[in-house]
Image 1 (cartoon, one colour):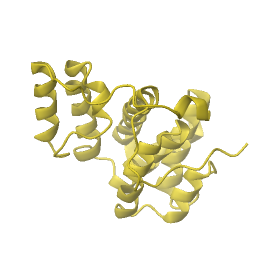
Image 2 (cartoon, one colour):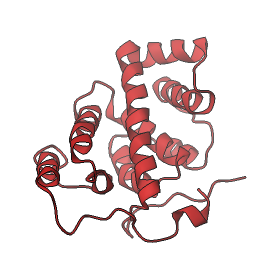
Image 3 (cartoon, one colour):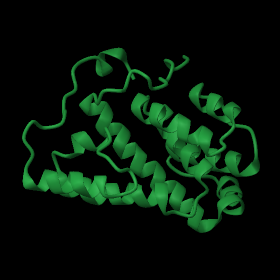
Image 4 (cartoon, rainbow, N blue to C red):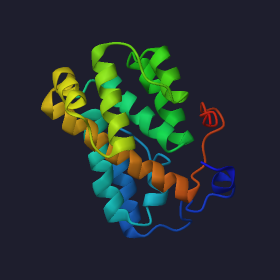
Length: 190
């Protein structure tokens, strides 16, 4: 993302006074597995009904779907890199490591390189990469993904891309702040 787009104050910080709808939306997030209102949801509070429904999709994808956690985190990191989204990256890199995603895979995603590693990791990365760059997937990529994660897994991968892309776009537009201790993405290579 060009620096001039990222520099500046948080455009949609936590409102100083909350409506009943916003308070309800916050309580829904706090009562779920996240346990607190996290940064991606702060700008979404402007549309509390949307936030409430959207966060339930994310809750399912992160905490209830059948896709193995290391693959979910891989998808999230690929989206974060694609959108130059430092909050998403910094929040999910430790989760990816804890889920067992290899450091070589994390580094390749960070650096915008093709991913190597186990067949499931390669297949999911290829599926996401083709979707994001070509807006479709080849038969061979689809077949490899089907073999790796099944048809239900393919749908979960696609939904995870869509969900985290929505969060990335929202945070980029809102200039949502990133904690100082979060790992940041390097500038893209030309």
